Length: 297
Length: 103
Image (tube, rainbow over all chains, first blue to last red; front, side, top):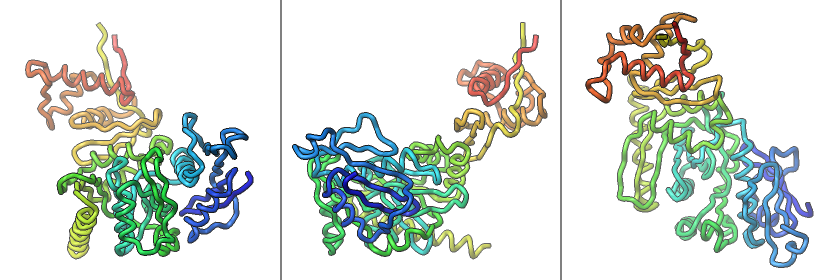
């Protein structure tokens, strides 16, 4: 490849190659706080032209690499950064075996994590991004990595993929414009802009965290809280995991241990402010229960 | 007419974890996870108590679980032994119990 860079996020190391310079420059800007040292990568991603002509004439970026989807549609070069992000997600989703992967976001405070999972559009990314600006450590907005051996959460704090109305919400929240990537319009998911997490989240990304609270958020609905039992949590998380089946017995042990160790709630919220307030409230209640149990013991 | 008899799988074939009122069961040979409600896990327990290689008919299993459960089918007229036989047959189809045909 003509242009390339290495990016390390949490335990995973990526080598990104490209036929064009622009996506690599954008990645270097977006990941400027991350380790970019060269070494043996876990995954290689290639952003390549669909034909020699397409490198210069209305350039189209096709995703290639260790793991690919046969029907992936090429993206215009202006969305090359998005292509790289999608390709990195794909490598993790299809190739990562060291941890149980949950399609979820996570933040932590005082060494204990809140895990938020839901379908695309449920607001888990935005909620984790908001909390990450308000005193919580951002652990990731796309994948939560659960260590089957220890039950700990391994941070994977990629830049947050903000979509549509979440972009303006986070632009109001974050003063530092250098933390944002380029605005990409008319993508398959609408308008997208990436936000680099706070520096501390990246500096601490090797520090694992114990899971404490599991939430199933749903954005855009009247306020509601419902307790979710272990069996429902288990079923929903098997659906939210990209590698539960591939991990076999390790995945079963990890996930059953995970849901049995935590309180879980489904929360509906109308907007980001209400979502943050609800997470804070549930967190306080959780802390009070934990404290009461410790006192009783 | 042959009588179906059921037996537990080897102990290492199933991993069972209670999750609230249900039970998650990982079938090691196939790698498939099942989520089962009462009284199905109790049927597995009853077969496991027989010991390795021992089999029981639905009627014998019914006796073993009758202390804990009033077995009632969707149809109130259905005999309890028929309900247990249906559940055991379903478990056999899933590969979670072994089945034998005794002449």
